[in-house]
Length: 214
Image 1 (tube, one colour):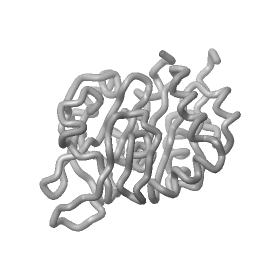
Image 2 (cartoon, helix red, strand yellow; image 1 turned 90 degrees about the vertical axis):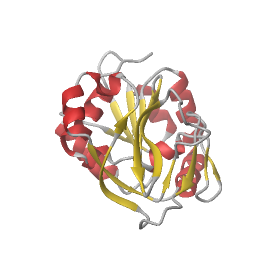
Image 3 (tube, helix red, strand yellow; image 1 turned 45 degrees about the vertical axis):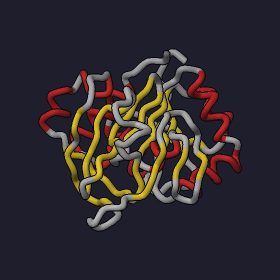
Image 4 (cartoon, helix red, strand yellow; image 1 turned 135 degrees about the vertical axis):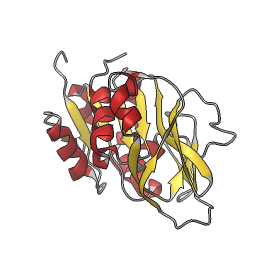
């Protein structure tokens, strides 16, 4: 796999098309992945998501992609989860009482704030640490630190992830702080829809594509 081959997990998630268009705007021709054997030829994988965690995990289990994704991560190849795709990377989601992939050490719960839910629209981030996720485009991501969100559940900055090294940036809504961008080794996640977040989102996506196999 000397050349980069980028896949998008295609399991019925509503933002598959928007992620595909974002990659194409970065001069990438991605492959839609519906079966586990397709992962063998990929260098990078994007895991999109719109909908519920339970539906997503059921779709993955029905095709064996849940175990194949764990093998992909163990191989050292980069994977990026977006929105529900990020939530599934954690241990557990309260949405449908769902056991998730357990690739990152967080749990997902519903907003309990007085603001309207879902959290929808543009919001700024609070950067927690330096990371290759934004180092090569630090100016863009610092000057344009607004990202687009649509979600009712989140990995909140409380006992299980407060101070955790995998949280790159947090966001606040209705007085509740949650993980907006995460990364640990070759596993990356974005609660925001980076494919709809303009220059900053594209910079983050490009940095993911520029990462190498561990």
